[in-house]
Image 1 (cartoon, rainbow, N blue to C red):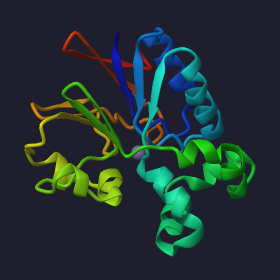
Image 2: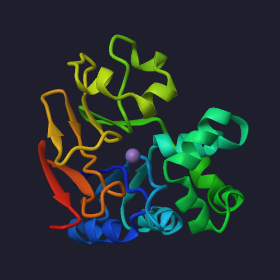
Image 3: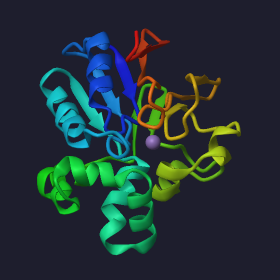
Length: 209
Ligand SMILES: [Mn+2]
C-alpha cells in the first residue's frame, strides 16, 4: 500500500507515462494527482484521459491546480482569462480542438476536482495554505496560487504538507512540507517527479529514472 503524489504534469503525456511505468501502481496504492494537468505541454487532453484511466488500476484522487482554476474561471473573469491564455492555455485549446471543447470533453472531471486530500499525517494540496488561518477557513485561490508566504515559512498545521506549483530543480524536503514540482512542462528537460510514501518512508521517483 503506497501513497503517491504527482503534481504539475502540464500536458507532458510522455513524461507522465514514463513515470507511471516506473511507479508500476498496484491495486492497493493511492495516487493523489495534485493539479496542473493542462497547459504548456502539447498533450493536455491525453494527460487527463490517462489519469482518469488510472482509476481502473489503483485508487485515484484528483486535486485542482492553478491552471485548472484559471481555465474554469476564464469564460467569466477577465483576470483568469488573461492568466489562462498567457500561461500555456493555447496549447490546451489546441489539444482539445478548441477552448469550448475542454469542458465538452471533460466537464465531469474538471468540475469534480478537490481542494486538498488528507491521509494519515499528510495533506496533499496544489500550492499550499495561508499560515495562521484554520484549514476550514482557507480560500481556494490561496490553496492553488500561494507561493513564498507558504513555502518560506514554518507552519503549525498538524500535517506534513505535500505540494507543487512552484518549481525547483529537485524536490524540496523540509520537516513540515515537501514540494515535488520539478518544472515538468516549463523546462524542456525537466522531469516529472512523484513522491512515494510507504511504511512512513518518503521516496522520490521521476520520469527519467
Ligand atoms: Mn504548475
